[in-house]
Image 1 (cartoon, rainbow, N blue to C red):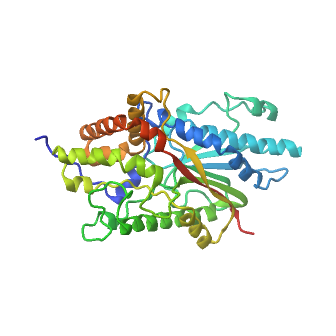
Image 2: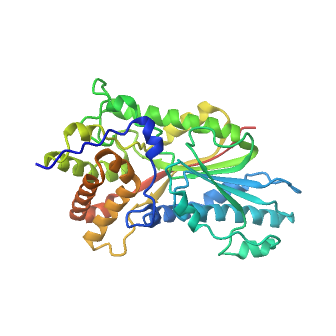
Image 3: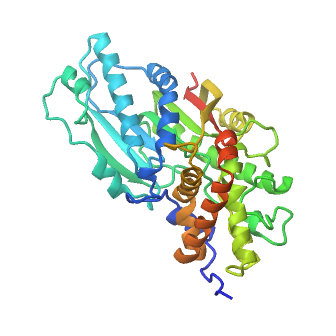
Length: 387
């Protein structure tokens, strides 16, 4: 029998240090597996622009206009969305006949994020003195100063009243920690036999819901201090359409079926123990609109300008939908891109490789139904300060 995985369980304190999308530029990296996020983000640009139109502009501004992308990760998506935001604001200044200010963009994520890959993708800064028309037309230069800000967005990251626009997409469904009761064998919320809450007991799902709402409350509290009074915030996170929190929708199909079965395979083959499997949980929660709205209203600092569930589509981007092996590989890479770092830390690189090979095999044999059924929905929220 092969040796059991003997890596230590990832503690909640370590999660912030470890959690990141797969860095670098390899096959399973976020940089090479974020096409679906790019497609979903492009489909929401009209909503983002509506949010930007609510930001109050001032003539003769002497301080930079500041935009922040929270949970930026390490691919080109964050650079593209920051470019869209800044160019849209520049066009608003142009339409008013005002000279635009300088722009600053802060890319923020946990310290474990691959900022090196991100900054290698940044285009060079346009020359000082370039006209607004040239800035708007430039595709190979950026018209803003850039900096990285490592840290958890569930806490303060910026000085008070310093940010004009906050943007965060596809990040707020990541919890700050796996709820302690979920990995406590004495608790009714103990998630025995599962690595995600899809299909779990109600008490387990409620523990996740409580953690999500606690985290979102911390996020909003921090932003209520950092955002300028005339600013706005655009947020996107995974949604579920069911009122039942144990039905996690697309996230459930991603983490609660073939990914779950692959963990069970490792147990049955004697590669890991049941306890090792049961001590691993994906710290993701797909919220309902009501889950989200309750926290915003309880915070009381923000007006909800828009709050809706938006159909994002499939996370699988394949060139040949009829090629089952390509679909299976895409599903495995999607799982590995977002959870691989945590899996590696929990069972080690070799067993992690075994796990994702099994995910790929299982997904390949269910390729047709995956393409038909795997759909993501997103909560889209546009918030501004309450008058």
